[in-house]
Amino acid sequence: MAGIVGTDVVEALRGADAAEQDRILVERSAEVAGVMADGFAGAQPELAAKSGFARWQVWAAAAAGVAGAVGVVVAPVVALPVFTVLSTAYSLLHGVIAVAGLRAEEPETDRPLPEGELPFYTVLVPAYREAAVIGDTVRQLARLDYPADRLEVLVLVERHDPDTLRAVQAASPPPFVRIVRLPPGPPQTKPRSVNLGLMLARGELLVIFDAEDRPEPDQLRRVAARFAASDERLACVQAQLLFRNAEVNWLTRQSALEYALRFKFVLPGMVRLGMPIPLGGTSNHFRTETLRELGGWDAWNVTEDADLGMRCAALGKRVEMIEAVTWEEAIDRLGPWVRQRTRWFKGFLLTAAVHTRRPGRTVRRFRASGLLSLLGVVASAPVTSAVQPVASVLTLLALVGGSSLVGPVLLAQGVSIACWIGITYAAARRAGLAAPWSAVFAPVYSVLWSVAAWRAVHQLVVSPFSWEKTPHGEAG
Image (cartoon, rainbow, N blue to C red; front, side, top):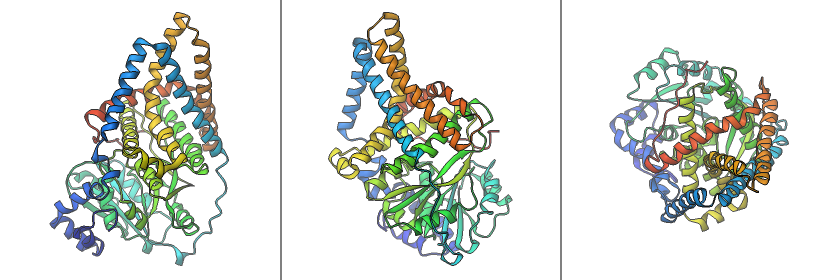
């Protein structure tokens, strides 16, 4: 098997029926766990997070950190314009992308496939400590508008998680839903789990849904039509993700605005501009064989979705968006929100490091549009969030001290804030959110991003592969 290490246990699993696969998962548990965790790193070490950082990257990061700290203390008149330009450029880039996204949403013209032409579909549902929500999800998936004889749903459950197992069984799943007990082993991550699902998958197409997801019933049909109408370079189709509990409190409203901007404007705009996109963590649909050629998921990258989106571009594949929606659950408490965004930002930094270890190869693989995604969007998100509070403090000091920098800096920061509020408001209107005016709080919400960004920097140094689990079923 290209991409994933071609061990005999992988081939044995792919050639077996469900009962035989279950037997192999028990009798050859350690072998399977090894491939789940390290198959990708063994096959493609140059693209694997586990391979660590190149020496030049360590020195460059250290130099940038020292230069930034010294600049803030010794030469704030230099540091402030640099930070301001960085943040403003990031905002304006998103403004340009959002304008492209504003024009990208067009009626779908893909010809619906007749019943007899629909491909076999595999749905993966990784579920760890999800007893509170997995039953409803299983019942929702049972109502998918797709022929039952061309559908398999694999619910991936850890062996040491009996509560989730019982919740799935209590939901009276239909025959096409199968519970898969995962061999134990590190790392305790979602990509490790879905790597086993990829080994077992029988479908021509494959999608991941999270344990709390509510996909629109016709999503699989619409994606199948998109793949049928496209060439083989199309590796993945990303559905839109929106929140079904946006009105619980201020935090969920701001999260809903963030997702509306990302999935209504930013990602469609990036596709329209020919830029590779960092995939969302769920509702990404793949050609199964193409995904295997790409190597599956990197079990050690904590944003395996963003990494896989960049890897598609690096290896010459294409990703598209579709208007079909999956409704998710927004986090309504600050602590879990910060931990989730910390993992995202850490993963963005890790993904950028993975794909820039060899700069010459990076330039050849990504070209200008890909570099703009990798560095201008993925890497810049945590970097600009980290420098934002520092820039704010320096601006206040400059204002108090009567510095001549104050005017230009305040103008640039005002443009940046206006840009974010404007595109967020427009995205909220397009998504049909109840309170698009809440976009005026985007600058306040960004303070939370800064907290997550600094936690991400710390974790990248001390625990780059740790995964902080997001709780589900607690929001209103």
